[in-house]
Image (cartoon, rainbow, N blue to C red; front, side, top):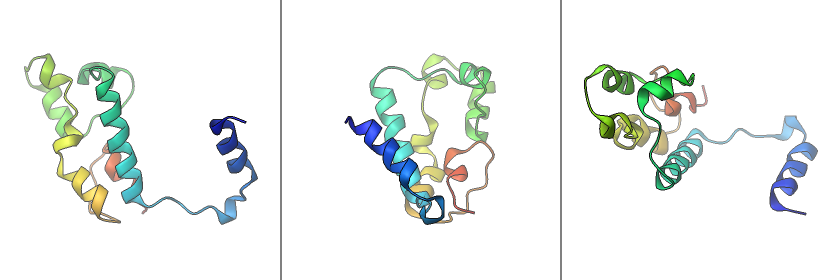
Length: 109
């Protein structure tokens, strides 16, 4: 049995009432790692294309999107330098309330 199928089977057999939500710090760390891995495979979508694909932009990404800047700044992953990432990875129930911020969405409220 491959590993992916094993995890799917385990999830199917686990009763929902015993499932415990993952801590927001763990969710944030996993997200940060996944984004870093995605960057190693190639450039991320520019912010206008990301927005056009249906993903909302956080307040900082929206600011960069409307500025007349070149492609390198449009493709940069701003979560890497955002204080919301630092709080999200280290503080449970962090005071992050920005719309479209993945680290805010991970908080267990």
